[in-house]
Image (cartoon, rainbow, N blue to C red; front, top):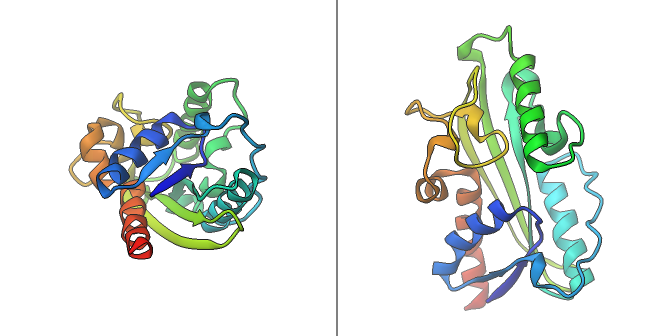
Amino acid sequence: MQILLATGNPHKLDEVREILSPQGIEILGLDSLETIPPEPVEDATTFEGNARLKAVGYARATQRRCLADDSGLAVDALDGAPGVHSARYAGLGSTRDERDSANNAKLIKALTEVPHDLRTARFVCCMCVADPDGTIIAESRGTFEGTITTTARGANGFGYDPLLELEDGRTSAELDAHEKNQRSHRAHATLALAHTLQTLSM
């Protein structure tokens, strides 16, 4: 089975490929297209809603079976923020690294007065697969629980990975790629999706 992953994030592409390739599912990136269609407007209020908008929009525009995800960080002390605004929590930046740095700095500042035991949070990933006619054929959701640290740690991963501390004391950015792909929110969502897709292909 061949599926187009609707993302411009190379880290996501690598993670999803590593999980789905052993399942016999080939994942193509947007760079495989001769012309990349405009990204659909993500104006839904939930991760699920934005994943559906992207999957359906890209599937119709490319006439390919398409997988899209929406993911982010939900912090309990901030009533679920940054949530669907995770990628641009601190505003737009000229590069992904600049956005990540600004987002992390804003989050640390927002939690300055919050004690450690109330800094619970989780990464959330919602995935959706749509066919070229816009029919949604599969959806999944995964989470990755932890606590927000006061300082960033770790050189692996991206986004808020250096700030989400896990039960074992390491941050998500201190996991190697193989371990992260077994434990992360995206891993859980992707594996659940793989099961559904394999059922459909039988």
